[in-house]
Structure formats: C-alpha cells, structure tokens
Image 1 (cartoon, rainbow, N blue to C red):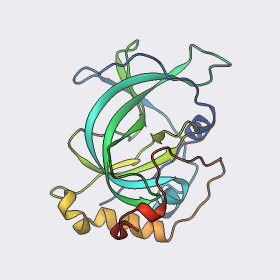
Image 2: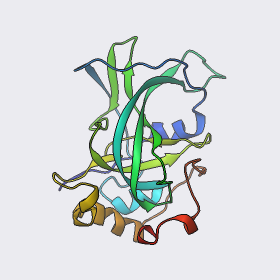
Image 3: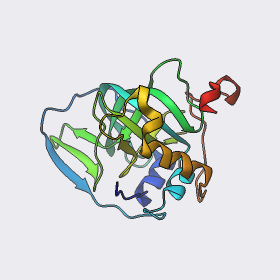
Length: 210
C-alpha cells in the first residue's frame, strides 16, 4: 500500500496558537464543495518513523459518531473573527501504538478541517480526507494545551485494509507497519508536548497493549 506522510508548517503553528472554540455545531450537508488548502512538509513525508516520532498518540480507532463541526478561533488576541473549521468525532480506541489512551470509554477527537457554513464548503488539506463513521483507522494525533486530541494532515487518519475489524487487528499489515515505526521512531519534534486528558498511566493498560 503506497502512501505519503506529510506534516504541515502552518499546522505546527496551529498547535501553538489555537484559541477558543465556537459555541455552535453544524453537521455538513451531503456532497458539499471541497476547498483544498496548500501545505508544505516539515518532516520526511515518506518516512513513517518520523511521522510517529512527531506524534503524541498513535492508535487504532473505530469511528462511532460524527458529533459536528465547530469554528475554532486561531488567535483570538490578534483577530477574534479569524476561525478555522474542525470536525469532532467520537472514537473507540481499540489499540494503543504510541501513548496510552483510555479504552474504558469512547473519546472525542478533533480533525483539522471541515464544513464552513459561510463558504458552504469543506476545507481540507491537499490529499487529506475526513474519517468516515463506521470505519477503522490508524490515527496519528497531537495533544493540545487544553488536553484535547487534534488529528490533522494527510494520512493522519489511515483506513485499515478491507475486511480488517476489531477481531482481526493482528492481521493488519498497516497496524504492523505503525508498530514497527513506533519501535524505530525518529523524534524531531521541536514544539512543546502536552498531555491528553484522555491519557492513562501505563500500569492500567492491558498487558496485550503494552
């Protein structure tokens, strides 16, 4: 399976300056217009070891529900009217690859990009895609200062192979690839790391996940 790995210069800044969250939720219409955002790479997009090293949490998750889309302020102190769409999902963490997220209950994740009601279009980075409800993915995420989990950029949610489900995760070559990447990860992160409020200590993670 040929894929590209890309992390984005504007999004590194995003991790540092994201501000308040809008108070309204919008479910996008079916088949909306897609507006692609240009991006640049900051690590080797073809090296999953660097991608995993950059992330805080890499995990296999099942998308249970689309909760909606909100508009988050990018830098409220400079321009409170400047916002960016983010899509919120409820995800069941099935296996932790890097970091330990709770598996006792489903958790919300924020996907950078989504429906903008003013433009009536979905904003996404080039080659990126939104997760689909009812599908299994390997998620690559960054913990934010407020404890939430942000998923952004191409291949930050990579769909598992057809036919692979919760009972057959050990058969997934994609999961094996990310497990190997974690063992041999290259950490070139140069921004602050935060702790997710959905993280748990290693001693409460099931032995098969350690």
